[in-house]
Image 1 (cartoon, rainbow, N blue to C red):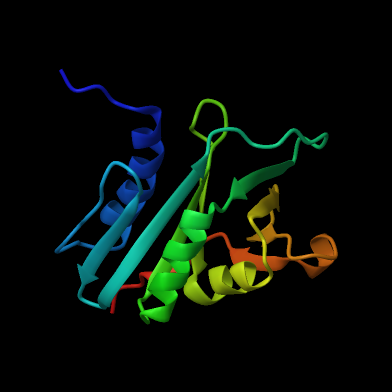
Image 2 (image 1 turned 135 degrees about the vertical axis):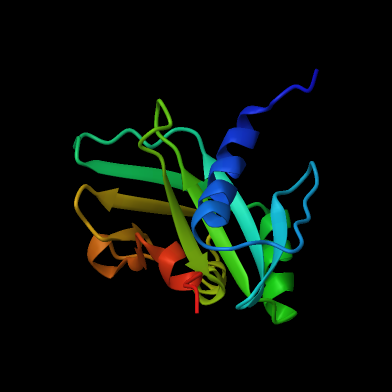
Length: 161
């Protein structure tokens, strides 16, 4: 009997969205220590780097969700290496909530993740108010000066020709 890990549900959810709605992979790679996948599609190749958070941060407002993602030195080195190699990189952040049904996935482009790393950040806070059409990632200066990432980014990144 194969034992399923909690992390498999989160990584699988991101892959399910991509595979069911956006792409048809020719090649997928990954191992136990990191969740990085290579995809070849009709629109080209890309590398998918996935992180997840199982619990949102405690916030007082019911219509506001926030998650903190830590970037380890290994994560930063690996992501920087992909960028330096010129890879078409997408970083998927699985933002989970209790019960999983209301969980969300934010997708960052390589330029967005590079900007975060270049700021020297070892963690990033991503948030969204109910009804907003973009996530906000704090880059300093509060919500008004945050990086905005469209909620429907997968549609934009993986649009069929």
